[in-house]
Image 1 (cartoon, helix red, strand yellow):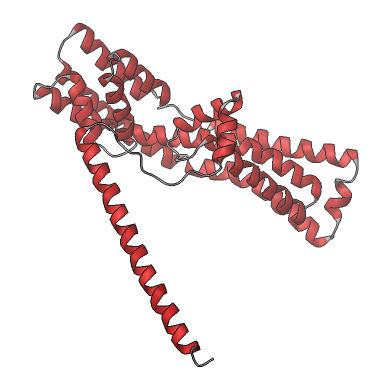
Image 2 (cartoon, rainbow, N blue to C red):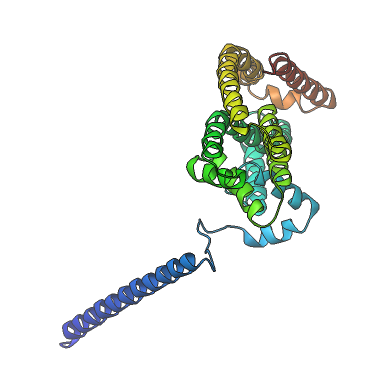
Amino acid sequence: MTDLPLLTIGVTLLTCVLAVIGVHVYSSGKAQRQALVDRMAQTGEVVMPGGRRRRFSGVDRRLRTTTLGKRIERKIAVTGLDLTPGEYAVYVVGGLLGLYFVVGAIFAPFFGILAALIGLWGGNAFLNWQRVRRTEAFISQLPELTRVLANATQAGLAMRTALAMAAEELDDPAGEELRRVADQLSVGHSLDDALGELADRLPSRELVVLVTTLVLSSRAGGQVVSSLRNLTETLEERKETRREVTTMLSQVKVTALAVPLLGLGFLLLINAMTPGALDKMTGSVIGQVGTIVAFALYAVGYLLIRRMSRIQV
């Protein structure tokens, strides 16, 4: 027992030495890896992808082999989200289970099933909303894009070089989308095909006009600079008009969202005034059918209000 303090000190010193050696090995290995990445990036041989560690790789591999997985992958590709199909599927399933238990506990089990079905539709609607959001962000950058292309072509640069330069100067999403176009052009794709795929990924009338102008100018020649200058002014005016229309219709959009929320509020009020009323209401077939019809009417009203407030500029 008299040697216990010495033994403790010895073990502590040995642990410290091993910790120092481990830190040194880790730092030297990290420095060697970074030097290797920098050397390969300079030679252009390999570009090691960065980013976060992917989750649910097993689910992702199995899902990509199915038709549903390929469809999800195509939708995610045009949204700009840093997600894999496997991650998206797991998150959606987890969200559906959470909706079922939470809504079922607050209202009634039947409402949990309806919430899960609505959440399944909401997962697809979320991807569509992200695509529209990305398209709107790209449209807002079109005036700056046409200005950069006009300046580059006026300086004597070819359209391929002008697109690559615009990809470096513009922020995302325009920068990322133009980098895809530049990569396709660098591997031999024609300008028509590369720009056509861009218009398919981000469908909008403004982008179609720009793509048509660039394609026709590359085919038949002509005053590309003057066409881009005029297009820049037109896009600036359309951008201001779209902003004004969005501001004017904001109250209508809030109303479309408030109507179904009021219905849910009334259900909560009824259940608070008479505990168990929702369980009794959805305990019979007639009550379940009436609940489904009521939710369907709320959905139709929401869609009709959004449809009437949709103005194409």
